Amino acid sequence: MAQQNGISGDYRKHLPDLNVPRFQMMKQQDAHEYAHEFKTKHNPPWLHALYMYWRSLLAEPFKGVTSDGESILGPSPLP
Image 1: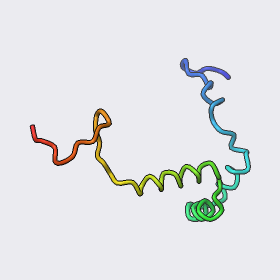
Image 2: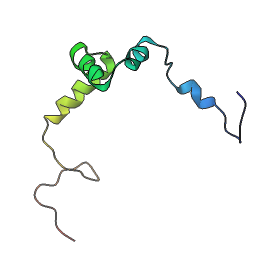
Image 3: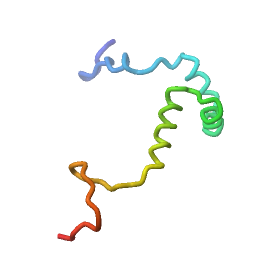
C-alpha cells in the first residue's frame, strides 16, 4: 500500500473481514432487530456468553473502589 505523509495502512490487517455472514446480517438490521436477535437467539454466542457473565456480576454487592483491592468498612475519613 502506498504511503501518504508517512502513514501506512498496516493497521488494516487487524480489522475484521466485513464480508463474513455475521457482519452482512448486521448491515441489514436496525438496533432493535439486532438486540432481539442477540437476546433470543444468542447470536453471536461468544459475545452473548460475555454479556451473561457481566449480568451475573451485577448481582454481587458493590464494595467500593480501592487503590489496593482491600475493602474499608464504614465511611472514609475526610482529609
